[in-house]
Image 1 (spheres, rainbow, N blue to C red):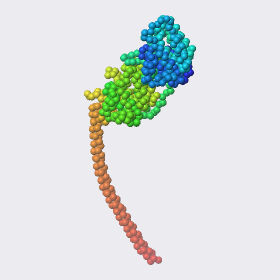
Image 2 (cartoon, rainbow, N blue to C red; image 1 turned 180 degrees about the horizontal axis):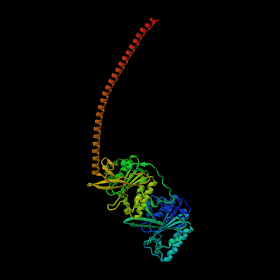
Image 3 (cartoon, helix red, strand yellow; image 1 turned 90 degrees about the vertical axis):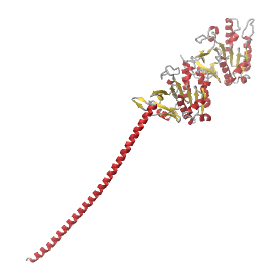
Amino acid sequence: MKSSLPSIAKNSNKAPTGIAGFDEITGGGLPRERTTLLVGGPGSGKTVLALQFMAHGAQNCDEPGIFVAFEETSGRIVQNAESFGWNLADLQKKKIFFMDAQPMPDMVQSGDFDLGGMLAALEAQINEMGARRIVFDALDIVLALLPDPAARRREIYRLHDWLLERELTGIITLKSGMDESHSMSEQSFGFMQFMVDCAVILNHSAERGVSQRGLRVLKYRGSGFDENEAPFLIGKKGFEVIVARTLDRVDTEVTSERISSGVERLDTMLNGGYYRGASILITGFSGTAKTTLSGTFAEAACQRDEHTMFVSFDSDGSEVVRNLASVGIQLDRYVKKGILRMVSARAITGSAETYLARIKMLAKEHGARCLIIDPISTWSKSGNDLSAHSVAERLIDWSKAEGITLVCTRLLDEMSSLAEGSSPLQISTLVDTWIHLNYLVQAGERNRGLSIIKSRGTAHSNQVRELILSDTGVNLADTYTAGGEVLMGTLRWEKERAERSLHEANDAAVKLKRVKLDAEEAELEVRVKSLNVELLAKQIERDLLVSSTANHEGELSRGRTRMSELRGADASKAEVKLP
């Protein structure tokens, strides 16, 4: 069961080691003024961890220290540690004292032997420099000189009591006799794990021929700690323990900003492109254009002046740039400007942890905002399945925490299905967007198809589109179906040609109909004009008729009136003559 990790706030009861990750799983470092047992096999990093603890105390905690070397000379130890940048040579002057306590190879024991003389000399040195930390490196070398187990146990308790009395924060390193369950055996001073306050086990093994390093805190009195084994690396700055996301970690900030995939129609299918800071997985068989689609994203990022890093496991960077140029993706100019960094991962050897640490370091140096790993499936061959999935999980967590948009490709086995049940990475469950590329064989042709399997937090197309690669760039074709089957390649072209012919025929028919209608309209307009003229003539004729009739009737009316007038005059005259 994995315990929740305590806060890494400054704790006066713990001495920080300065080792990334280790202080997190121990809640602040090693027990202050107590003794820690550090056990590991050859090459597991015992001396490196102890030296880093000592250097950090001297440089950052104002705690001078003493390093007692029973195996290697101080000169060799300092020389070996130069590459870590701890500056031990300068620290030797005031902050760190190295005591060479290596037994002579031809030394023959005679009489009683104990650690009393050495401890007396160390006490004088402690008082002189005010030492607060001390390391006994490879104590088993001197313990082997003692005649029997009882004498060894006596001297170990003597040393432990001496450390407690002087309130020193101490580390004792021992070579391990580890059984198959990675626990200490009694013949390798296993009783010491009960005596000390903290016990840490280092192991270094090979999984599938790949180096794997692990660290486990076996016990820690009076403190909570992560009980599970944690992978670690020995890099340019020394020890780095890899820890997973902890309960007290603050969630990363999210944004609704969209960035282009480099293919306009794919952006449309994604309802605007990828989310900034999202993780994208592109899966497909060999030759389905996974690298090409990654290259379009890299080019689009560089066009936005965003520092981008392209990590290739299949080819050298220069080969990737040349190959992508054949499909209109021009990355060389961005490489020359320093915006794009091409990294050949073939130069990185070791476990998946090594790959992750190296990529993180290079991305930080480059200030990358976009990262492409092509293909990430290589990691599944770098050690055991559990570590490969853990590394993929931490890669995504790290990229989100840094606000880096991550695009990974994964090569599918020709005999496998789309499901990742057989893949140790299981990365498809972790990513935000999953794009799948596949082949579709029709009419004797092999064509590429693209579909979006998932895209969290956004609407996305469910169509299968043909991915077209040409010397002018990358594009997605329109969807054509026949009988429920998506058409691609020649069949799609024939369908397009048939649709164009039908469209042209329809256009011609429409044009012919329009001409005919125009002619009929013109004919009707002529007829309308003729009828209008005829109508006007009839109206004039009618008006003339009406006018003529009115004039005639007027004349008749006036005639009748005149006749009446004339007849009235005769009547008046007649009336006058009568008596």
